[in-house]
Length: 455
Image (cartoon, rainbow, N blue to C red; front, side, top):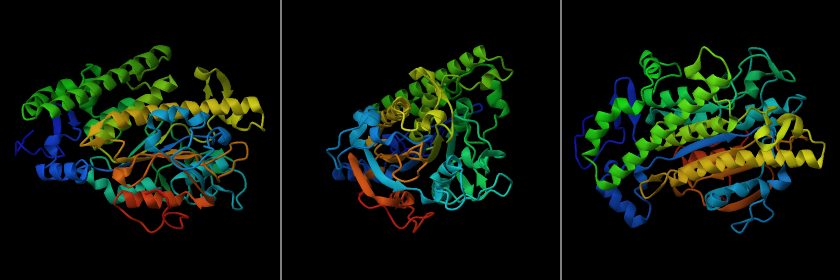
């Protein structure tokens, strides 16, 4: 590591060691004094030096909308039961009601709403009904952003999930499994399969390479050596050049990395103990809460270090029939979503929805507590959380459950519930997000223009 100027540290500074590369969070030493002064005067926290990020989090099988949708509009809205866990970050979110994915509707293609829900979620395009090799849908908005901004970060984008991806086979009424298990599409016929193994994501963030382990990473895993052990000398050298605030921030960051590394190791050991496997170092957590939280924390790490600014995360694929025994629910999620207006089933769906909101709220609180310049990582992010289906029993794709968290560096005015006219394209939200990202586009999928009322 070479620091050419004591007063200014390059944003792309890494701690390096044998087989390990550790990116750093934004430090005061990375912001030129002129920008710091300008940011202080404007109250913007040297905004020009702070990157903006976007993430898209997909939840399966819709939601119980009566318990999701606030009754009042504007800033004085009261959180409904499903969204109550968001109370600590209510001023940092927008509840967007009335958005629609028309291209997830059959439009003459018959059954297959779960496959179309995933395929259309970020593409806003109609998926070709096929379970062969001739899949066709559209480029997803995250990949549109990655093509424009991805070169500015070590990883153009990051695709995560908790269900192993499938790219072939018939998964939903004649639709390829590629549609049901992927929301990110690099081309109309090339999905970006999500990585489900926290260990591989962790190592990818430090190697800035592909998903496969390098020989050095495999050796380090066998020796049970922390990535921090390998970069410790570089960290010591860097610390001597930093002021007191940056030293404290660096220490907190390194402690957080180590804590996450230990949690991944603990999850691997538990998974290996309950399920005999020859791939013990790569064991995926058996506990769903552990899995979700690890993936969310890896997203925080990726944003905090500016390793990527674009992430997609499928907490489960649409049509997932996972049971939630941690909630006392043994029935499958998909099965329950076909509730037939049964009050007991609707109540269980609400509890599942609330559970996913709870994990999301924890993620947002972590981003909000992660300082960056004069603000937080959440302040400089825009994060969509939602589904491509509204009521799972009706399989409708209008009035979708959609949240938008973060201010995108001041581009969005949060803390409100906005109700849009019926059939407002969800793709309009994506057009507005691209503008806030600094990469404006005229249209995406079936969009008709930017989404009003966000600024």
